[in-house]
Structures are given as C-alpha cells and as structure tokens.
Length: 263
Image 1 (spheres, rainbow, N blue to C red):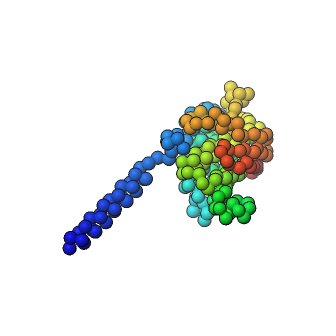
Image 2: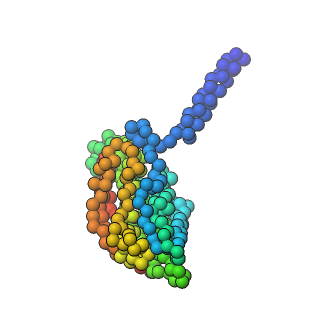
Image 3: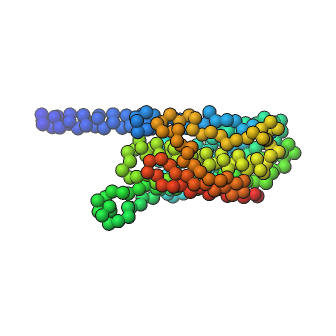
C-alpha cells in the first residue's frame, strides 16, 4: 500500500511538471538568437502612400486549407498576415470619390527537406537543409466615382529560403522573419512601380513625382538588421519585375518573379 502511494505521488509530480512545461511553452513569445523577442511585424511605421480615392478595400482570400502541404503557420508571422498588415498601413485614402481594391488571392508556403551532396555528409547526418517556398498572388485595381473599374493588375511573387537543419528554433524564426519582410519589400517595390506606370490618375498631385518604395526595416531591433536591405538587388519594371535576393547566415540565393497582368 505504501509503495502504491509513493508511485502515485511520483506520477502526480511528473504530471504536474509536464503541465507546467506546456503552459510555459504556450505563454512564451518567439525570440531571436539573443533571447530577445522578435518585434511585431505591424508595418505601422512605413510611409503612407496617399491615393486619390475615398476608400481603401483590402481583402484576404488566402485559405491554407486549399493546399495540402501549406506550412504558413510555421512562420513567426505568416506571409498572408504580413501582406495584409502592409496593405492596411501603406495605402491612405485622400480623395472624395472612388476606391482602391487590394486583394491577396493566395499566399501558400510549402516545405521540403534536402539531403547534402556527397555520401560522407549523408553518412554523418550533417548538411541537411529545410526549404520553404512561398508564392503570393495579389490583385489590385481601382473604381472611379462613376463605378467604372480600371483594368486589374495581377501579380505573382515567388521566393524560397534554405535554412540549415541544425539551426536552433530561435535562429530559424529570425531567418523566416527577415525572409517575410524581404518578401513584403518585393511586393511594395512592384506595386509602387505599377501604380506609377498604370494608375497615375489615382496618385495625389503632390505625390506623383516623389512616390518612393516604403522602407521596411526601421522597426527591426535584432542585431545585424542594418545590412538587411543590402541583400536585395535587381531591376524593377512595371510590367515584369525580376530581382535576386540573398538572406543572411547560410541561406541560399532567393529568386523572385513578379508578373503583372492586366485584365
């Protein structure tokens, strides 16, 4: 009887410790390698782009259930949420008629594991990498005061990131965080150029000559963020923007293709 009670007490203690560990995990916030929490990706700091419309309509049609292998939830900030927050803070209605419509049609993220080249590395179990492939589809247009719709612009953005398998969870979160911000930066560059070229009539008169892409990193607080923008290079074109990007710390070159189509 005494032995049974002793075993029962041990089980209760173990159960209590497991519950407390679970609660601690649930209440913790995503942090960087230095132990500091990653900043919120709110985009509240970015410059407003004033549009000569009375209303901004933002829609998110992305549904992760449409894709069997979607892993957007693995990111500290999912790509669709980042794009939505960007749009909510980037565009500002300053007119009296009409509206600008911004719709995120898709934002799927897929995962794959790759093995290292060479039998010896595979035998040692080192050199594996985790790949994340993200594809965005964004549609935008405007409706004038007479309810006439402009031609639609449909843009597709594709980016990939490779993260060493041996990275800690904090290192992985940081790389994904920077990756998503670079992705949104690509979105802003392409949309800004397209609005200037295709929809100049919805720009406020005092902004037509001075419109610039938004600065994305002023809210970042992790070490090394000063070099973030240096990782992006390429030429932007209103009809077909292409750029190459490379993230910090052992991530592979990232290809971006944006292909605005007028409908």
